[in-house]
Image (cartoon, rainbow, N blue to C red; front, side, top):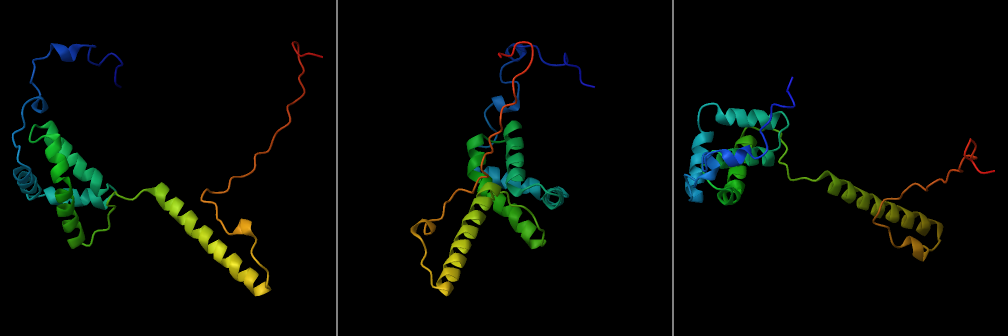
Length: 174
């Protein structure tokens, strides 16, 4: 069990030697191409790419995996954050190429579930509008103007107002 008192004392970080941590010193590599070469060399070590593909296979998305690799390199003082931002897309595509070559099903990490739901709702609304047009054209009726525009927001259930219970008790007014 972790003790609530097993934590650093407030201000303790100010008492350590400056530039003691690797990320507080200048980075080892400042050229993005050299940093990318170093990452590719690390991925070519025995078992490294196998581990990456394992994590992809069991649910980690590719964007998160690449961000983890790059953050680790920044924390070790290998390169700076801005170099990470420059080489991230290339490293992403490199790992993606290996995953595609092995026919691995994986989540790339770019898809947003909320936007998928909104897009699905809009598609359904347009389909419903078209079906309504077809039905009314078959019956020879015209479409009212209010039916022409489809609301972009999902329909909400009407709120039901509940009656307040009668106030009874010691402090209730009569």
